[in-house]
Length: 110
Length: 280
Image (cartoon, rainbow over all chains, first blue to last red; front, side, top):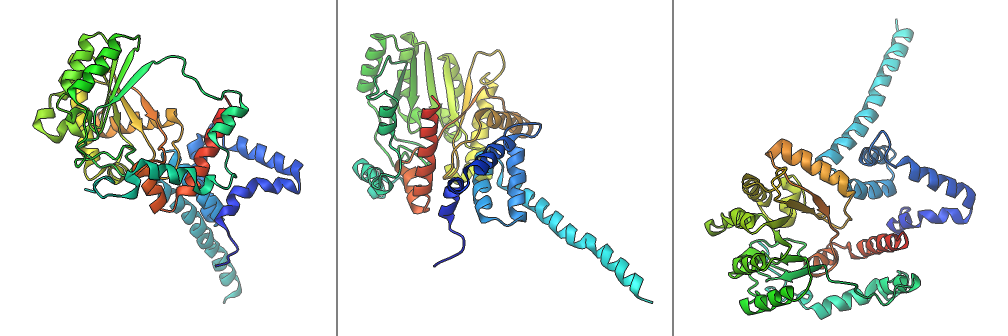
């Protein structure tokens, strides 16, 4: 079945450099540096990436960072907790706008 | 408990069949680099041994566990074990060379009835270091094994034990029901005689291998995690954690093929191997 997303395309990520090598190199160098150990551990960064992957609902990123967090020894419970953090922020983001809705409704209502 | 590939007359019990699968398939297209080509490109082909440092002896496939990833297809249904005569030949070799380390593995090597004789003889012969690959659960499997920690201590054995994770969910999925719980009991018995304790001189190392079709993470980070978790939850001490990569043979190859992970895993494994070879 033909789909927009093909799992095999994830391995071809590097080929974006074929059409614009200079910017691709800058991106991949920067990407590599971002995920190095810093004040945050490589594992903490991987968990953030896993949560963000679910927020932006990128199947390539979910594939990559599910594997990466498992490799880094994160428990399955820990992985799910990270996704709940992402979901809580997404849900909270909608709900906190309820205040805006209430403000507007109160303003225009008698 | 699952049966060994051997007992199931599975095609992968045949090593020739394993080689067929590994040599063909995705390697036939020529898209993946081969180890030989890479070694040739680096000018190291053919690889030649310089000296023998470790003499690893597999004393049999008999085991009390049937781990899903087992690379030698061990299990309770495997009866093939090394005889005392062959062990004597190994001892003769050790006495005639400068090999420093005897590394005894299995199956569960402790299940070989001549295991204790072999270890005692090697110790008496003055082998500098004797490593036993113990699966931990064997210590609690039967009263006749309960004194293994004392036996290890008496023979100055270095104990090296598999423990893929510090929680039951992951460990038991790979190694069988209640394996974590029994492994913790085994570790506690080893700790009680001094293994893994500071300044005891009795070394207890753990070996982590990934529970699935992925590679191991950073060894130091995982060692920190294991030390913290095993201490906090079970009051267990150990010396070092070593991470190892599952190799695509025997029951792990079966898992890769059955789960549809074979090609992705091989590509990842080879890409990392070639990268590390290039990095020197």
